[in-house]
Image 1 (tube, helix red, strand yellow):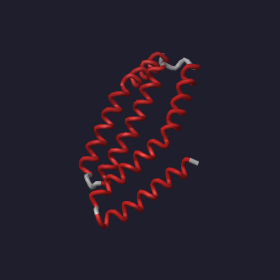
Image 2 (tube, one colour):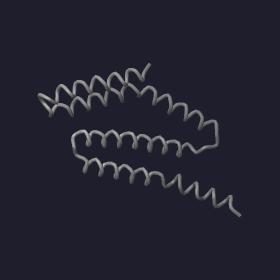
Image 3 (cartoon, helix red, strand yellow):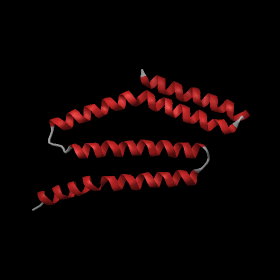
Length: 128
């Protein structure tokens, strides 16, 4: 079970961070980054399975493949932004974390414009 591996990596990293923080607090960031990267690598197979499923479903329907690509990119940006925000907060840099969070949201909204405009055009076409 992958969830047990993810939880295990998280708990082991937490224990290591608690121990290392007493002696060398500057190394806790590296342990946190290593744990995050390990978890990300562990779930990459699942992410590729999800992307393949969405792609095959999109090919069977009349959905625009460009919209699916945009949605996958937006989801990736959201995950990466959250990861960066968490690391910033772990190091005590909440101000930078807030800026990264805001930047990620602005990028997501900017990338969503084609989907939003297409949705609005469809609504306008349906309305009398």
